[in-house]
Amino acid sequence: MATMADVARSAGVSVATVSHVLNGTRPVLPHTRQAVLDAVDALGYTPNTLARSLVTSRTRSIGLAVSAISNPYFTEILQGVEAAALEAGYSLLIADPHDDPAHERKVVQLLHERRVDGMIVAPSAHPHDLVAYLGRHEVPTVFLDRVLPEKARFDQVCAENEGPTARLVTHLAGLGHRRIGLVAGLPGLSTTSERITGYRQGLAAAGLAHDEDLVVSGNSESAGAERATVALLSLPAPPTALVTANNAMTIGALRALRREGLAVPDDIALCCFDDFAWADLFSPRLTAVAQPSREIGAQAVRVLLDRLAAPDRPARTVRLPCTLVHRTSCGCPEDQDHDRAADARSAGPGRKTEPSALSAHSAQSALSEKGTAS
Image: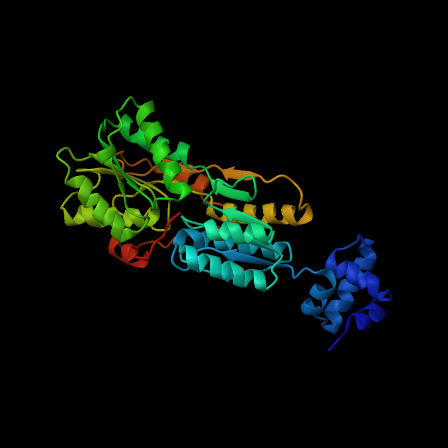
């Protein structure tokens, strides 16, 4: 197996120069850098990551704790994190906290014990133990998607929530709806509280009174949203339009409406927060707020790398804008040109082309019944 000394001899440089080229610790002349890279390629040299970490106290690895397995939304964020980390020369160690505070604290400790250089975490609704652990051990951390009151202590990256939710409400009000229901997410999450705030802002902007009975928690999951939708439909004066606050709850709401024999949008209009792969393939096609999921993940990596480079810099919260993808479930007619433009705006770099056909039943089955808070 080739060593760094073998690379240095082949390239005609010192071992220190090889180290600078491979680790990026000091600028090297372009022709010297190329000679080293050519020697590395010719000899098949593989850097000893463990040895390097012992010398530098850095493993060039990032711990990522998000519910990527149970949440399709976080799967796209993971892709953004992975691409940005790889580009920066970092590897990922991934753990799924399942949105459970006790499990969350455990997996973060395990990642920390693997000596990751920093962490990116989507905190649960009750992250007190998590925050205490990260603060006590001074772990460089970026909170993802959900923001915490402790924002002065940690960097955070998330999407805008209030304005986009308000826009859904004002759009429905503009179509003549006066009783607009909200299937809200898991209590305790910042995304839930911010989307409720946005819902109220939208009502106020449209001159509509806020009715507490029209806001029901779906606990950020499909089954919970199905129950919440049934409760809304059972009101003496049920809503004529619904806003669902994440992708899984949209599926639950649709299931409840179908069970009650109601057609969207003829009997009830529907708009949702979180665009997802099959939203354009339902009948009717779902009007949705699209979050820049992959860019959120990539931005989290960039913020973490900034923190590692300057540990004493002030903490910051980065919010990324969302896009309203206008389709037909709200009750608007087909507008192909508008749809194509909206889809283009919501599709980030590398967004995959969606399959040409998918039934609503298959799409509903494909989304997990587990909690999918976002």
